[in-house]
Image: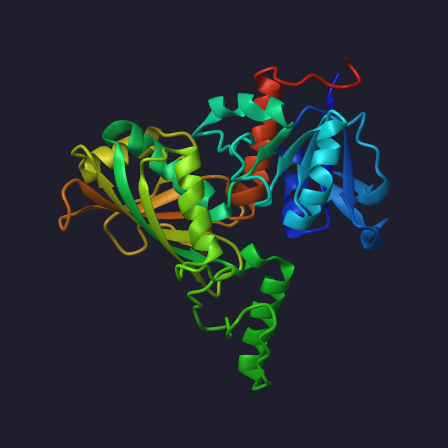
Length: 343
């Protein structure tokens, strides 16, 4: 007997990607339901070779549903996730609504799979921020080997991280540049076409943005609370794929060659690191791929036991949809949930 899976926010970028990945990975689902708000009622979305009609989240009964993949934003999750969880359906939430709750596990399956057992407290599991997910996949094997003391990250985040509106704005502004039309900025605080913006999410009292704080808080929760983390988050004119320049300081010695060997064997990682023109990964090349790519691995002589690495991943896949489905697979493979119909 297979599982019944519901996807909330099925018409969005991440929701559609979740449907694609469920089909690609042959997730053991007997039934998949696409859900969204009433304004998307009866919209059609693809699931493998099938077409699903979107149903209304407001009046959907989750009592016979096993897993809910929630990707409709924090406000929707705060309203619906507890109600869904109380009906016996495990919620895997892609928003930031529950990531920082001590009784909600924040999971990257390649990094902290054992923490998933804590989901029974509230029947909710949090998916990390897209920037954090790829970062900790690269950091975990290095931390296990040489223990990380401090990490300095600069992110170069694609406009798809801001949803369809962000992608549309980059497209429209780029076209406007070439035809000499006026350039309008609605989604972003400044022009994004042929520009970079050192500002993602809202500003906090200490001068950091909420996006930068998320990377800090989530890395500590997932990997190790003793690691010191600082971040600068930048929006760049790329449609899909987040990039990160990561400077790491370790407690123990680790060479670039050792790091390369470790990362080559690490789950979820692919090392593309040749000291030649084009011997590295870019966000354009990682779009549509599942792996977290690591390039430009080199020692930092300005600190003791320091390394620099370049990390690239498809933010819609590993940063959101794929990680959520890997969490669902972890629940199934460890026997942590049983199909409601079978029960």
